[in-house]
Amino acid sequence: MATRTAARLIVDSLRAHGVDLAYCVPGESYLAVTDALIEAPDIRLIVCRHEGGAGFMTVADAKITGKPGVCFVSRGPGATNVSIAIHTAKQDATATVFFVGQAERPDLGRGALQEVDYSKTFSDMAKLVIDVRDASLVSEAVARAFHVAASGTPGPVVVVLPEDMLGDETNAPVCPPRPMPRSAPTKADVEKVAEMLAAAEKPLVIVGGTYRGDPLAEKLVAFAE
Image 1: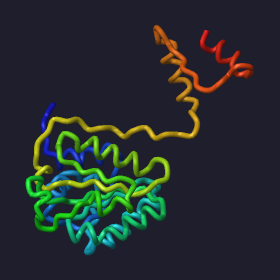
Image 2 (image 1 turned 90 degrees about the vertical axis):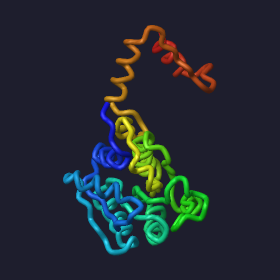
Image 3 (image 1 turned 60 degrees about the vertical axis):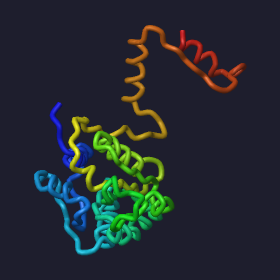
Image 4 (image 1 turned 180 degrees about the vertical axis):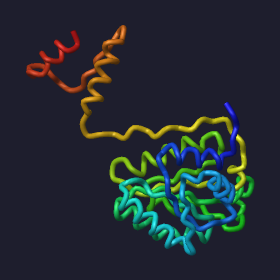
Protein backbone atom coordinates (compact mmCIF):
# COMPACT_ATOMS: atom_id res chain seq x y z
CA MET A 1 0.00 0.00 0.00
CA ALA A 2 1.36 3.40 -0.98
CA THR A 3 2.39 5.79 1.77
CA ARG A 4 1.04 9.31 2.22
CA THR A 5 1.40 12.04 4.79
CA ALA A 6 -0.96 12.27 7.73
CA ALA A 7 -2.28 15.53 6.28
CA ARG A 8 -3.16 13.88 2.99
CA LEU A 9 -4.75 10.96 4.86
CA ILE A 10 -6.97 13.44 6.72
CA VAL A 11 -8.17 14.89 3.42
CA ASP A 12 -8.78 11.44 1.94
CA SER A 13 -10.72 10.51 5.09
CA LEU A 14 -12.87 13.64 4.81
CA ARG A 15 -13.66 12.69 1.22
CA ALA A 16 -14.65 9.18 2.36
CA HIS A 17 -17.13 10.76 4.80
CA GLY A 18 -18.77 12.78 2.05
CA VAL A 19 -17.29 16.13 3.06
CA ASP A 20 -17.45 18.64 0.20
CA LEU A 21 -17.21 21.87 2.19
CA ALA A 22 -15.11 23.06 5.12
CA TYR A 23 -14.40 26.38 6.86
CA CYS A 24 -11.13 27.67 8.24
CA VAL A 25 -8.84 30.47 9.27
CA PRO A 26 -5.38 29.48 7.97
CA GLY A 27 -2.60 28.99 10.49
CA GLU A 28 0.92 27.63 10.38
CA SER A 29 0.17 24.77 12.76
CA TYR A 30 -1.86 22.92 10.11
CA LEU A 31 -0.48 24.27 6.84
CA ALA A 32 0.19 20.70 5.70
CA VAL A 33 -3.57 20.10 5.64
CA THR A 34 -4.33 23.23 3.63
CA ASP A 35 -1.62 22.18 1.18
CA ALA A 36 -3.30 18.78 0.84
CA LEU A 37 -6.70 20.44 0.36
CA ILE A 38 -5.33 22.38 -2.61
CA GLU A 39 -5.03 19.03 -4.37
CA ALA A 40 -8.62 18.13 -3.44
CA PRO A 41 -10.77 20.43 -5.60
CA ASP A 42 -13.86 18.40 -4.71
CA ILE A 43 -13.65 19.80 -1.17
CA ARG A 44 -14.40 23.53 -1.14
CA LEU A 45 -12.52 25.43 1.57
CA ILE A 46 -14.08 28.68 2.80
CA VAL A 47 -11.37 30.96 4.22
CA CYS A 48 -12.66 33.25 6.98
CA ARG A 49 -11.19 36.27 8.75
CA HIS A 50 -11.95 35.20 12.32
CA GLU A 51 -12.27 31.78 13.92
CA GLY A 52 -15.52 32.76 15.65
CA GLY A 53 -17.08 33.46 12.27
CA ALA A 54 -15.67 30.26 10.78
CA GLY A 55 -17.09 28.30 13.68
CA PHE A 56 -20.57 29.80 13.43
CA MET A 57 -20.59 29.21 9.67
CA THR A 58 -19.70 25.58 10.39
CA VAL A 59 -22.59 25.24 12.85
CA ALA A 60 -25.00 26.90 10.43
CA ASP A 61 -23.85 24.66 7.59
CA ALA A 62 -24.47 21.55 9.70
CA LYS A 63 -27.97 22.74 10.59
CA ILE A 64 -28.83 23.47 6.96
CA THR A 65 -27.41 20.33 5.37
CA GLY A 66 -28.04 17.84 8.17
CA LYS A 67 -24.41 16.65 7.81
CA PRO A 68 -21.58 17.24 10.30
CA GLY A 69 -19.95 20.63 9.71
CA VAL A 70 -16.15 20.76 9.39
CA CYS A 71 -13.84 23.52 10.59
CA PHE A 72 -10.04 23.95 10.74
CA VAL A 73 -8.33 26.44 13.06
CA SER A 74 -4.81 27.00 14.27
CA ARG A 75 -3.61 26.54 17.81
CA GLY A 76 -3.81 28.84 20.83
CA PRO A 77 -5.74 32.01 19.93
CA GLY A 78 -7.34 30.30 16.96
CA ALA A 79 -8.66 27.50 19.13
CA THR A 80 -9.92 29.79 21.87
CA ASN A 81 -11.57 32.10 19.34
CA VAL A 82 -13.57 29.18 17.93
CA SER A 83 -14.56 27.97 21.40
CA ILE A 84 -17.78 30.03 21.37
CA ALA A 85 -18.93 28.13 18.27
CA ILE A 86 -18.01 24.81 19.89
CA HIS A 87 -20.07 25.78 22.92
CA THR A 88 -22.98 26.76 20.67
CA ALA A 89 -22.80 23.46 18.78
CA LYS A 90 -22.98 21.60 22.10
CA GLN A 91 -25.92 23.66 23.36
CA ASP A 92 -27.77 23.34 20.04
CA ALA A 93 -26.97 19.62 19.64
CA THR A 94 -25.36 20.21 16.23
CA ALA A 95 -22.97 17.65 14.76
CA THR A 96 -19.66 19.36 14.01
CA VAL A 97 -16.00 18.34 13.78
CA PHE A 98 -13.36 20.94 14.67
CA PHE A 99 -9.76 20.22 13.67
CA VAL A 100 -7.36 22.23 15.84
CA GLY A 101 -3.64 22.67 15.28
CA GLN A 102 -1.23 21.94 18.10
CA ALA A 103 2.43 22.52 18.97
CA GLU A 104 4.96 19.92 17.90
CA ARG A 105 4.99 16.72 19.93
CA PRO A 106 8.48 17.09 21.49
CA ASP A 107 7.46 20.50 22.84
CA LEU A 108 4.16 19.49 24.43
CA GLY A 109 4.04 20.08 28.16
CA ARG A 110 6.96 22.50 28.01
CA GLY A 111 5.07 25.75 27.60
CA ALA A 112 5.54 25.91 23.84
CA LEU A 113 4.32 28.91 21.87
CA GLN A 114 0.49 28.94 21.84
CA GLU A 115 0.32 25.50 23.44
CA VAL A 116 -3.06 24.66 25.02
CA ASP A 117 -4.22 21.47 26.68
CA TYR A 118 -7.35 20.99 24.60
CA SER A 119 -8.55 17.99 26.55
CA LYS A 120 -8.93 20.29 29.56
CA THR A 121 -10.08 23.36 27.65
CA PHE A 122 -12.86 21.68 25.69
CA SER A 123 -13.80 18.85 28.06
CA ASP A 124 -17.06 20.57 29.05
CA MET A 125 -17.84 22.03 25.61
CA ALA A 126 -17.27 19.12 23.25
CA LYS A 127 -18.68 15.61 23.22
CA LEU A 128 -15.15 14.29 22.74
CA VAL A 129 -11.59 15.56 22.32
CA ILE A 130 -9.29 13.30 20.28
CA ASP A 131 -5.56 14.06 20.55
CA VAL A 132 -3.88 12.37 17.57
CA ARG A 133 -0.14 11.86 17.99
CA ASP A 134 0.41 8.93 15.62
CA ALA A 135 -0.03 9.38 11.87
CA SER A 136 -1.25 5.80 11.47
CA LEU A 137 -4.25 6.61 13.70
CA VAL A 138 -5.37 9.74 11.84
CA SER A 139 -8.07 8.15 9.69
CA GLU A 140 -9.38 6.15 12.63
CA ALA A 141 -9.66 9.42 14.59
CA VAL A 142 -11.57 11.10 11.76
CA ALA A 143 -14.01 8.20 11.51
CA ARG A 144 -14.54 8.22 15.28
CA ALA A 145 -15.02 11.98 15.32
CA PHE A 146 -17.76 11.91 12.69
CA HIS A 147 -19.45 8.94 14.35
CA VAL A 148 -19.51 10.52 17.82
CA ALA A 149 -20.55 13.93 16.47
CA ALA A 150 -23.63 12.53 14.71
CA SER A 151 -24.71 9.67 16.97
CA GLY A 152 -26.94 9.92 20.04
CA THR A 153 -27.40 13.56 20.92
CA PRO A 154 -25.40 15.32 18.18
CA GLY A 155 -22.66 17.73 19.14
CA PRO A 156 -19.12 18.95 18.51
CA VAL A 157 -15.98 16.82 18.48
CA VAL A 158 -12.49 18.34 18.61
CA VAL A 159 -9.59 16.62 16.83
CA VAL A 160 -6.14 17.85 17.92
CA LEU A 161 -3.37 17.78 15.29
CA PRO A 162 0.27 18.31 16.38
CA GLU A 163 2.08 20.22 13.66
CA ASP A 164 5.00 17.82 13.18
CA MET A 165 2.70 14.76 13.05
CA LEU A 166 0.97 16.06 9.91
CA GLY A 167 4.15 15.56 7.87
CA ASP A 168 4.73 11.98 8.99
CA GLU A 169 4.14 9.35 6.33
CA THR A 170 1.97 6.29 6.87
CA ASN A 171 0.53 3.42 4.85
CA ALA A 172 -2.57 3.25 7.04
CA PRO A 173 -5.79 2.86 5.01
CA VAL A 174 -8.73 5.23 4.96
CA CYS A 175 -11.31 4.19 7.54
CA PRO A 176 -14.84 4.21 6.09
CA PRO A 177 -17.74 5.84 7.95
CA ARG A 178 -18.93 3.81 10.91
CA PRO A 179 -22.54 2.58 10.81
CA MET A 180 -24.84 4.75 12.87
CA PRO A 181 -26.85 3.13 15.68
CA ARG A 182 -30.60 2.92 15.17
CA SER A 183 -33.45 2.56 17.62
CA ALA A 184 -34.80 -0.41 15.65
CA PRO A 185 -33.43 -2.69 12.93
CA THR A 186 -34.33 -2.04 9.33
CA LYS A 187 -35.56 -4.73 6.97
CA ALA A 188 -32.08 -4.86 5.47
CA ASP A 189 -30.60 -5.41 8.95
CA VAL A 190 -32.95 -8.33 9.61
CA GLU A 191 -32.14 -9.90 6.23
CA LYS A 192 -28.42 -9.52 6.90
CA VAL A 193 -28.74 -11.27 10.29
CA ALA A 194 -30.74 -14.06 8.66
CA GLU A 195 -28.00 -14.54 6.08
CA MET A 196 -25.32 -14.65 8.77
CA LEU A 197 -27.29 -17.19 10.81
CA ALA A 198 -27.90 -19.35 7.75
CA ALA A 199 -24.18 -19.42 7.05
CA ALA A 200 -23.18 -20.04 10.67
CA GLU A 201 -22.01 -23.55 11.62
CA LYS A 202 -22.63 -23.24 15.36
CA PRO A 203 -24.93 -20.27 16.06
CA LEU A 204 -25.47 -19.35 19.70
CA VAL A 205 -28.34 -17.37 21.22
CA ILE A 206 -27.63 -15.57 24.50
CA VAL A 207 -30.77 -14.30 26.21
CA GLY A 208 -30.88 -12.06 29.27
CA GLY A 209 -33.69 -11.71 31.78
CA THR A 210 -36.30 -14.24 32.93
CA TYR A 211 -38.52 -15.78 30.29
CA ARG A 212 -40.16 -18.63 32.25
CA GLY A 213 -43.88 -18.52 31.56
CA ASP A 214 -43.48 -15.81 28.96
CA PRO A 215 -45.25 -16.57 25.63
CA LEU A 216 -42.19 -15.19 23.86
CA ALA A 217 -40.11 -18.04 25.32
CA GLU A 218 -41.80 -20.58 23.02
CA LYS A 219 -41.13 -18.38 20.01
CA LEU A 220 -37.51 -17.99 21.08
CA VAL A 221 -37.08 -21.75 21.43
CA ALA A 222 -38.66 -22.28 18.01
CA PHE A 223 -36.34 -19.66 16.53
CA ALA A 224 -33.27 -21.25 18.10
CA GLU A 225 -34.27 -24.73 16.91
